[in-house]
Length: 484
Image (tube, rainbow, N blue to C red; front, side, top):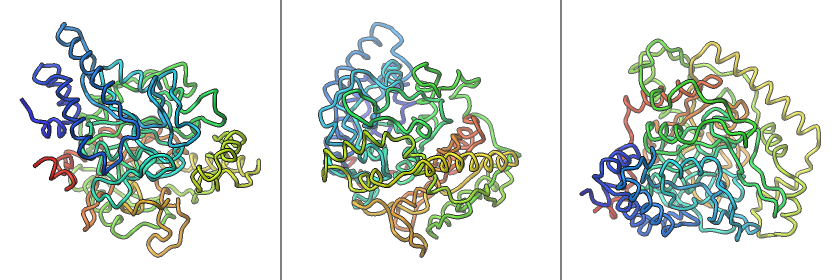
């Protein structure tokens, strides 16, 4: 019988295999993770609303199904954390806003519905910045989420708690959402695999919508739901469950012509790969540039690709991205909410809402998105994949929105998101893989971007890189005491 630490170290694929074979019960798996949560979450604050009793009840139900010889689903007994911007029926969904501190949705998000139908055990809701308008893990309602690799530092966001949970073994998988990098950012900072599939692959409904309160909706033209995991095949397993069309999301894509798990097979021999250290405009920390540059060489030296340094050629779209966020925001409703909450709303969010957004700002943002996409599809017609650093900086201290200086350049506090959000503007599939570590032992991610709708190649490339440079056996030193 495996011990608790061994269970918490298992990837979801192995865990569900042992549960299916009755080598391990769902109840034992959940109890092991809940024990890990009890020991570590007072430090990490990954879960803002844990649901241990619901998890135990779900685990017993799955265990009964298995004992009766029923098919309990492809994720039978696997614990999962759900980001607190993603609706969960009957479970508080606060979105880290005082306006929603008692809000309990009446329905599950599509992704949650599908995970539960597949037998996954929901551990609770994972922490986020207020309404996800940030790339870090602090907010006005809950304790600040910290990074398992160094608890003085941020795990990134907005899927902050999901990243901290998986990186510390509080469940092998978690759900993230990504409107400007929010799956890839914490996955990079926490040493995980995270994927933003093509826009529409995973339906988004109801998201953060409710009739009781004004202004709450997803960033409809930017948002993606994606997996966060320790391994690529766990990410593919989650996508095999969560992806697929649904009429509730008008952007959802038809059933794919491929099998998510089978996409991991095959080599990359002969592919033409572009490596851009900065997309042509963004300052990047020299350490990050060095780590990711070495990782990009793996595609040439180990995986038999042709790698060329090249940039897509679009101008810095930073201002346009925030214009698109404003376009996807109910400014009237959110401004009313900010007026009611006063200093109980995050200052950076208030500043964003109080900007004098003009119609020209919003239409200019739409036109810029078209220009970025046109540059990108032309660029990708010459390359199978694009590699970049996921983020231009290593993890930084908690309590700030971002560094004010990158590689000697003064920048705005959220400018460090500059390598992820352009791929939300284009809707392309993109993943982050652990590329290596800084001299201080902090994770650095490399972003793998595919052509329009080419999720299979992004997954295959991720799996090939993982095989060439495995990462899943390296854990934060924080876990040494609980595993002793």
